[in-house]
Amino acid sequence: MSRTLLFRLRSFGVAALAILTSVAVPAQVVFGTDDLVTTNGNGNVFPFSQPATGYTTLNVVTAAQIHAAGVAPGATLLDLAVVATSAGTFSVPQAQILVGHLLFDGTALADQWAVNLDNPAIVHDPTFGIYTFPYATNAWAPVPGVAAAGFFWDGVRDVGVYISVAPGVTGGVAARRTSTNFRYGLAAYLPTNQTPAVATLTATKFRVTFSGSVPTFNTPQATLTLSGTGSAATLDGGDALTVAVSSTTAPNASFLLLLSSSLTGGHLPFTGQSVDLGFPAAGFSDVFLISGAGFTPANAGVINFFGALNGAGASAFSVPLPCGLALPRSYAQVVILDPTHPDGLRVSGAPSFSVKQSCRYPFAGVFPTTIPDTNTAVAFTVTVPPGTSIADVDLVLELSHPNYTDLTIVLDLNGVLAVSLKDATTVDTSDLNGRFRFSDEGAATLDAAALVSAGFVYPGTYAGDNPLSVFDGSDAGGVWTLIVADAVPGTTGSVLGASLILNGLQ
Image (cartoon, rainbow, N blue to C red):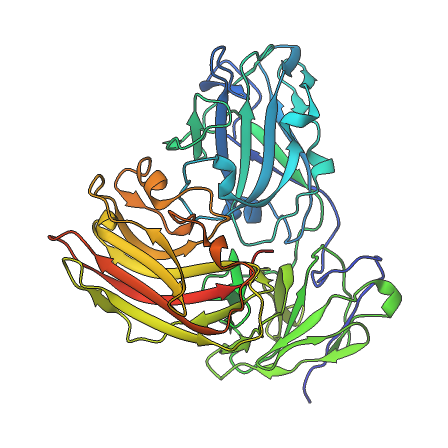
């Protein structure tokens, strides 16, 4: 007889993937871990203050550290506190403090440093006015505005704390600490186009406190990967979401995948063979099942396990994302039926993704395609059906080239409307290797990014040399042509793939 399990959700009145047996107590994580004695270690100031220039830092709090402290996916950041060597009052005329998930693992981009954070929560903004708080000697001083910002952790990604303070700081919070966390620092307020300098010291010793639960069975033996990365996936309509499930202890187990735009810790007693999402009044109107057929609403009631691992403890499939589908940042979890575990199941972490209400049209071609030297262009085409008015155009181009300034890149519609996204120059030898999205919403052009990137232009979203808005208002129907040429002899590269993205502005 097979063992049966039942998960019954208590009504919290919020949408959630509350599938963690737990005790709802705050979990605290201290970075720069030593005691509160401030006579040893390295001296720092929070936030860094420079009388003439101000200071900006981007502090990295790793997912591994948060996990190690017992913080559950979906936990809310309740407090960020610092410890000082003396008593006083911190005050700065202008400050920007943000908390968010890092978009890039181990790399910080230049320009406005806040672009390194994915949809960050605002603790303080320059328009809010003076930022001030008191502090006492050798005691934790809460930083105001953190709880109200409403940041919650997705259970997968590293967290960045961005602090930028203007000149004129009084009462800088001096502290000492001995341990290290990565941070990026620069003597400038709200820096623009300045390369982050890496230092293995936090801005000061600080402590973050999360709400939520300490999971009892959110273990490495249950893993869920989305889009091949497990984190930070932003997809377009027409893409396919790749899902991979694995368990090291349950090779033939049944599993269930759930998706929600909200995620909080909770408690689920169980005694049966399904998940019971409760009644509609419980507020679970945005919970979906994930399968190869797509997303199925699971608003309430009993949901059965729908899949089985392949005998080797794994399962993988792709979920088609139709054009026009829009999903905000959403969180997924897998529940694996596992009789070898004391609780009878495994629950994964919660990787997240979002889907733009857009449509991706891949260009036809054999990839990779070598870009010939000395201005012999390669061209790729895609035909779009008529009837769609253009509100926004992006171009996603996968490139590899040791000297990006050799390139010219042109996008053309029906031989009538054309825009040059890159004009060849010979002033820089920075190289490209990865996926680049040309968008009018890009913060900088490739040229501007190369000037501060020390020889390498990081994959990401960039503005073209000329705006793509020339296409706005036209009918998208017809033949789109992408033309890439290498105008300077000496080095060659390749086009690895290309797609046209229509109406993905939001």
